[in-house]
Image (tube, rainbow, N blue to C red; front, side, top):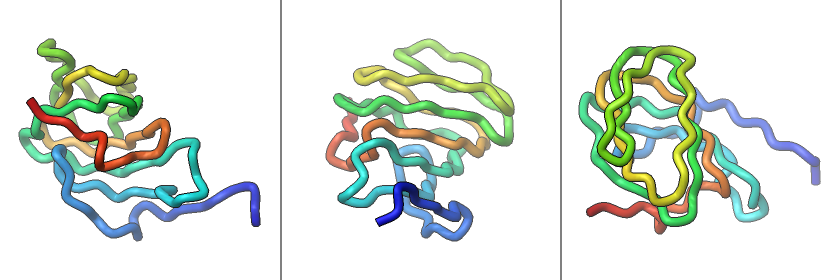
Length: 113
């Protein structure tokens, strides 16, 4: 087995998520390190949090806001945000975001108030 994986995010199937649509890579049982998602944010994403996952958002395109524990922060291309477990978050605006998730994304760790 190779010591690396390669993914073509623009060819990954889009999946609905609280933020809009995510194209996910590296969500395979033998990977325990991280996953990466290309996310098209809806105009108004749903507030959620994770109990164990850490996320890093990097805005690729668009301008808008990210709400972090009730505080709104303006974002634009190349803004990077580290979101720790327990932080309630959502994005607002038409954004394309590269999302790194550590450990790999687990849909069972998506929580809503």
